[in-house]
Length: 487
Image (cartoon, rainbow, N blue to C red; front, side, top):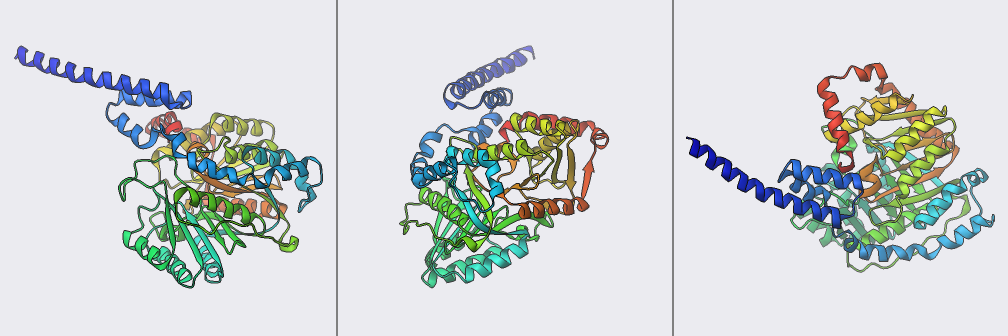
């Protein structure tokens, strides 16, 4: 009997020695070559050593970025084409000769210059904007614009499914392609998993130029969870643009398991459409070698609208986290109030401190997130961060009218942001995102009114209520927060 026990221990020691050596080699490789932030490196090393095999598998799927520089080399070269006009605009702004839609925008020249210097993001003047909160209304207007298209259609989504609403969408695209329009469709490699192979073939057969951003090696399976193109852009005839949180699928028109889908999307008419079109062109150029007819900007009359706006993009291929930095500017510029709506709240340490400082400075800080959860660990991590902010006087609301997917930040009565970026580290560092940063009192008031209306369907989380959560919930929150740099 003793001999058998010793044999088992010996075999275990041999296997563990192999695992230990393997874990050490992988850990050394991550430390030396991966060049992650120290906290992320430490967490991955811990995961690989404390949960053998599982930690390594998780790293392969969501942690590795060893070929990042090569992966986006072509994309970086394409992005350099954007340098055509931002230098002259920056000079005009600095020399005081730039013409704004509204003279009040001049007060925020530091923010405008930040976007310009970081990634050459232009300020577009004289735009008109319509806001959609409901998927049915958004797609009704979008389909109307698509059916009226005369020349070009650019469509880019993170998720595009094969179901009822997407079938109607695809039929319009196929019809317009058969009419002879240039129709381009770009879908992320992770988000296209629920579009059937048959639908893809039919789109291409009809003449739609379909490209997949960073596809997986195997159909329906994509091992690269990081570096997803989370942007949602539609540009019609280079005159009308859409950007915001809605993807394409029945759940986004409130026909899914999450119930009512509360989101925010913009319809833009004006020069800012050029920014959306240019972003689409660069992304499509990276994803496909298929010939495109090139890109030209459009001229818009000054009477189109009176809204100033930056179209701001960010991703793992950029030198600055421009959307994240824009959020920081909205917070630090606030003197009276801040309203944030986001499905996931996993801020980095800098943004967390900015919110605390704002609250301590007497700014009325309000954050709303959904009661329903589609990503458990992210939801629990969000609760941990929001619970901490409660102690600093931040108002936290849990939306219970459906699933809150909107990505909106409102600062005082003039600055606001609507787009695709969640208030989390993944959106700031690992996803490709696009947001509209708007300088306008009316838009600001409308977005704030929407927040206040959503409060009717929300529960305010007080410090007393938060402290009543169970011990199991506390453990889940603490564990999820520890993993937050990896989520």
